[in-house]
Image (cartoon, rainbow, N blue to C red; front, side, top):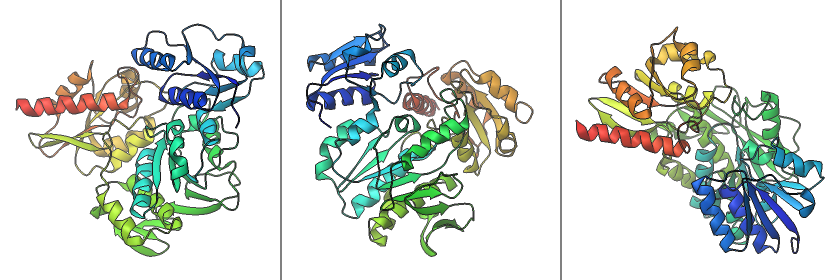
Length: 442
C-alpha cells in the first residue's frame, strides 16, 4: 500500500485513530485527523501530541470538502451513519477502517477473535498458550494496544493475536486472518445496529476473505454463512463438537485435557474461552502439557467477576466488563450463593425482560443505577425487590445493607458505562475503591 504523497483523513481521535495517524505519517502520507469533540480532555491531549509530530488536527467543526483527500480511515468508535462519514462516502472517497489499514502492513499470520463476549479473555489466553509453546506473538486490537501500533513489530513475530469488534470489521476489504475465532453472538450494540441481523452481518465479516487454507474456530450455537475456511467447533452445552466441556473437563477431540476447577476461571462462558484457545494452540502444535500449564497459570483480567473484597462475610465481585445482557446472564449463571445484584447504566436499546427467570432464581435484591434504572425496574420488579441509587457510592452502601453473611454482591451492570463513567474500567475501578474503603472502615 503506497501512501507516499497521499492526503489521508482519519476520522476519530481515540487511541486507534491516533495510532493510525502516526502509522500513516510514517508510511509517507500527509495526514489530517478529524474529531467532533472540541473539549474532551483526552482528545485535546492526543491532538497536541499529533500536532507536535506535524499531523494536522481539526476538532469540532464540520468536515471540509472531501476533495481535499485521497483516502479516509475510520476509527472503530465512529458510527458510519454520521454526517462526516456520509460526506466522504458521497464524494466517492475510498474509506478503510483502522483494522484494514493496519492489515496492509502486517507481515505475519493473524489469529483474529470476535464475538459478543469473552473476546479479551480469549485473546489473552491464546497469546499465553502460544508463548508457552515458544511462539513469538503479540496481543493487540480491541484489547488495548492498537493494531496500528503492534503491526510495526509484525516482521519479528510468528503470529499476531488480534481482538476484533464488529465496529472494526465493518470496513474491511482484504483483511484475512489465518485463524478466525467466533465465540458467540447475543444482543448488543442495538443503539448502533438497526437489527440483530445487521450486527450478525458485521461479525460474519471475519470469515469474508478466508480460504480453504485457513481455519474458523466457532461455537456450535453460532449461525454461520457459507465459509471457505476449515471449520473447528466447540461446545459447552453437551452438543457434539471437536472441543467440548464435559463433566467439568475441557475435552479435545475426545481426550480429557484439564478440569476447569484447576484453573482460575469460573463459569461455562470461560470454559468456552479456554476451549477456543486450546483449539488455536493445537493448530500451532503447542505441546499439550505446555497448554495445560498456561491455562492453569492464567489469571483473569480485572473487571471480570474479580473479587475485590469481603465485608462481614459478604463477597464483593467486580464484573464491570458486563456491558450487555449475555455477559450479565453468564455472570449470574456462575453464582452459587445468593446474590445482591448491582446493575444499570447507559441505555443501548436492549430488552432485559428475558432474564426474569434467572433473576428470580439467583438474585435476592437488585440495586440500580444510571439511565436504565426505570426500564430495569419495570423488567424485574415483579420477581425481585428493586432499589434505585443515585450514585455508585449510594449503590454500594445500599447493597451492604441488603446483603447477609454468605451472600455475594455482584456488580454486573449489563449496560455500558458512558452515562456516568469514562468507560467500564473507570466504573470498575470506582466500585473496587468504594468496596475497599468500606472494608477499611469496618
